[in-house]
Length: 284
Length: 144
Ligand code: SF4
Image (tube, rainbow over all chains, first blue to last red; front, side, top):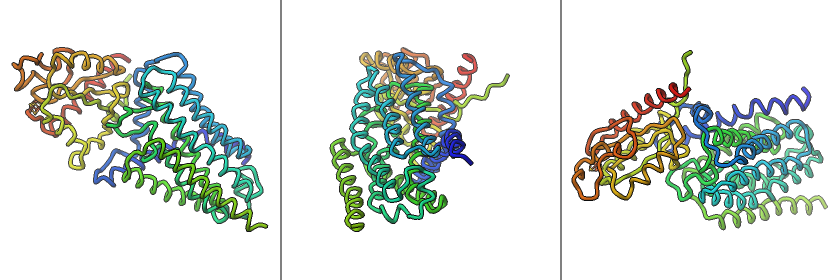
């Protein structure tokens, strides 16, 4: 199959994958708390309902921006599988996140605005890592596309164990898991109401959920890059990593933004920087 | 044409505490604990009126919270229903004749389901929410 077909396939399959993942997440979380939890398809019911509910437009720019958020997020994944240069993806990914920040920042709600500010901090913390990560993967494999990396004889995870560890850390931010869910969260009773999504109702919130499903699928694709020898191995690694994220989510409380920024940069520098430096010195 | 809506599978709740004694609030929260676990029904306890389908109010209306209750109700997108939980929310209850109490929640916003009890038991609160879901479906169908 041509890469283009894979790209289109991502657009169709990723929401199903992300939605099911969210369903499993909610059941596992509930079981960890001694509850039964919702049905597996609950996230689909929720999003379906959001599209049935009345949508209140706070201003005319929120909807286009959120559609941009959704579109760029889907495009980022489609471009990876479509065989685009991996470094380019980091920027599309960041653009998607930026659309969400702009949408949340354009409304009057102080909660939404505070959420947007925090999301910017979170972006500032995580973006350098993603660029470094993709650059390091391209460097060790000598390839610049998804298909190239998968075909490479080098097992990326063995070459970049530090980067993989840092990825686990930064993924907590992207998956909006505690202690890094500072900009928005699914849990009630928090200081920010719902942060970023406070002022979004009906289908607007539906777009954000859908985009989040694409994002989860994209993170899974990133894990596949690390375990490029076999897709099954990659999916297994993603399942283990996601399980760890849920465990951390349920056993920690929210951190302050200073801690998020500092710890993420420290981890990025120590593990990613250290890993790349070690490879460079060994290669000499 | 029979229209299958997803409201009955995904009712999101906003809980507001008027002037309750906190007895009913504790019972509402008990619904979320492992024993009752309303998340089984797809219920999410959201803290945001703009995301909520059901406004669950405990306690009665007083001079100070009239505006807040009306505001929360206005901020909820349609379709929406109101469930009054406990004697206080239904009629003012034991505090009905206190100098600051105006009466039940229906004093300021239309109430769809009344859940009796002082405090209302978790079973009856869940029953009230389920009846609220039916009302939600009805409103959705009417507007569709
Ligand atoms: S109904 Fe009874 S338990 Fe509930 S808030 Fe009123 S006094 Fe408290």
